[in-house]
Amino acid sequence: MRLLVTGGLGFIGSNFILTMLKSYKDLSIINLDLITYAGNFENLKDVENYGDRYQFIRGDITDLNLVGEIGSMKPDVIINFAAESHVDRSILDSSQFLKTNIIGTQVLLDCCREHKIDRFVQISTDEVYGSLGPSDPPFTENNNLKPNSPYSASKASADMLARAYHKTYCMDVVITRCSNNYGPLQFPEKLIPLMITNAIQDQELPVYGDGMNVRDWIHVMDHCRAIDTVMRKGKAGEIYNIGGSCEYHNIDIVRLILNKLGKPASLIKHVMDRPGHDRRYAMNADKLADHLGWKPLIDFEEGIDETIKWYIGNEDWWRRIKTGEYLTYCEQWYGALKN
Ligand code: NAD
Ligand code: DAU
Image 1 (cartoon, helix red, strand yellow):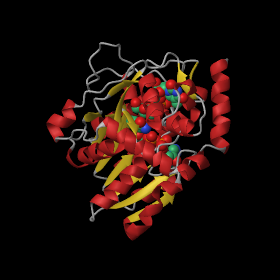
Image 2 (cartoon, helix red, strand yellow):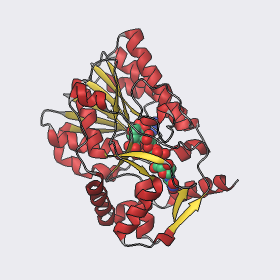
Image 3 (cartoon, helix red, strand yellow):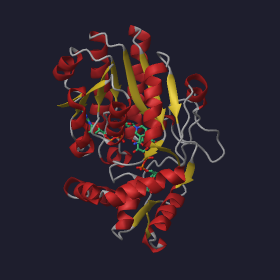
Image 4 (cartoon, helix red, strand yellow):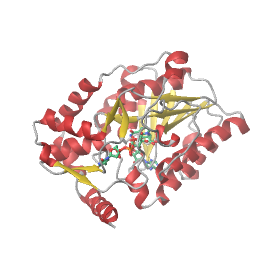
């Protein structure tokens, strides 16, 4: 089997490529990634061991010609991870989100159609469903789409396009919608790696608003296993929710991390809230469990211990990232929050 993975130098894509190459000897991967601020070549430094089973192409999923050329290499499946993925950045400026997340998906879908590629897997998010109240049941695949941020609106648009290509052109498209991932190789702008790395550096831990927003956490390897399951066994045209059934208030995650690192609670700093901040996400992943036999395996306490250890052991990796572009972004973001 030959896969075209897009966005494979990012957090989830690189974990996916590593585990797939290791698990299946008969599988090869083409990785198309633009290497934006979020893409990191170092994430896949170990894939050299896999010789011609791995090929990297630097490029943009919105580039019609390039994507067409790659399509003629006849991958069996396209798995579209490539995206602008950070909600706060989409609040500062949504233009790149619309370009990559919507137009990029359209270009890949057209390539799939033109080259008769067997299957298209769209990696989507629970954020397309909007926000839950404290006692609402978790989202199912039948919930309406009510995205609240420019990021989630762009992901919902891409989902709609993928669905439309299935209906209109009878293409084999499957969509996965996952909750919040954590684990190694996550860019330290996201809650868990930001809090771990700031705490290690004895810097303030910025908690938005009252810190009582809820996220449903899943280890990235459980997510990767779910994607593999859907890619192999999912039914064309279907949507599959993926979640960890592991809801935490943000403030509790932050306290847990401080506790595990032996750092004081005085590092916590409540800052202004994220505009349009979704209060709660929770996923009902029964369809994936009942139809395809997947369930999450990694216990959160164990997963977070292993993740903290990974960041402690890979300081060079994240210290290099927390410079340059990242610092400029932080300045703009906190400047915008104040105004
Ligand atoms: P990430 O930001 O870590 O990585 C994104 C990758 O895409 C980077 O390597 C970047 O260089 C690449 N990229 C960006 N624009 C591109 C373009 N125009 N052409 C080619 N490559 C481009 O993202 P992530 O957290 O790994 O998320 C991957 C996917 O999973 C995204 O589609 C995201 O919406 C989805 N998702 C993420 C989570 C999460 O918790 N992180 C949860 C559910 C779904
Ligand atoms: O739910 C899936 C989504 O999870 C993915 O689709 C997105 O790509 C991914 O970025 C993530 O979105 P969130 O907005 O939920 O993740 P983030 O890590 O940015 O924030 C998690 C929670 O923590 C959220 O309630 C905001 C809060 N937060 C975040 C940051 C960065 C803070 O309180 N302080 C912070 O500094």
